Amino acid sequence: QVQLQESGPGLVKPSQTLALTCTVSGGSVSSGSYYWSWIRQSAGKGMEWIGRIYTSGTTNYNPSLRSRSNITIDRSKNQFSLELRSVTAADTAVYFCARSFIGAAGNWFDPWGPGTQVTVSS
Amino acid sequence: EVVMTQSPATLSVSPGETATLSCRASQSISNNLAWYQHKPGQAPRLLISGASARATGVPARFSGSGSGTEFTLTISSLQSEDFAVYYCQQYNKRLPWTFGQGTKVEIK
Image (cartoon, rainbow over all chains, first blue to last red; front, side, top):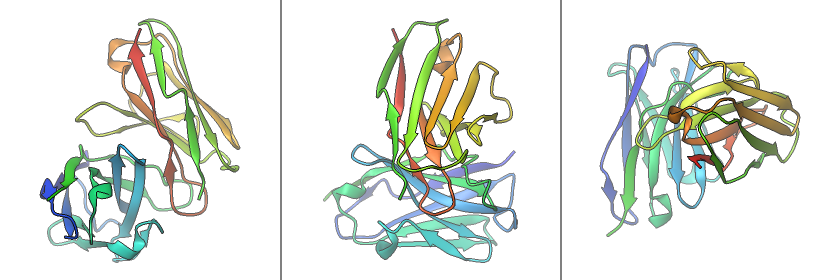
């Protein structure tokens, strides 16, 4: 079965760039059947979808974070990554990666990774 | 974007009883709604998609209903492992996909 695992620094300084990676096992990010998403959960905003990437590299972002976000995919490592620039304390959250199906009727998330806590603080 | 509102924020229920969780969309989303269970430190788990279709391996005591703007997740005969936070998520037509704020089901 497919499993996802987030990794990256747990502490980022204000104004710097948050960088996280999601490693996929038991499946392939090269599959044409799925999108690969980043989602975060914070005390202030609850669960928030950040954006997604397809195996081709095509991306979609939440308008609220589009200007600061960049999602990339590395098919050779079976990983996809998130960069979030110019972070503030409001970006402190648990960050999850997740998979969803291609197609209008399949945009739920399954499975998810266990999440990684990122704190923005000097 | 579509705003999802869940109620109540916290639900206190005794084991063996039934929990009824609500999720409301700010506009019609047809049946494009999913429910998730989330326990601390774990990956959120898909329970329901398409408003009422149980995911693989999800016990029959979990049921979803509704369409348009009003949705319900019912957990019958609550068991100890069901105490968690539950989120709804809409995926109707246009990005961004959005979530409700969650309902915490706690032991009474």
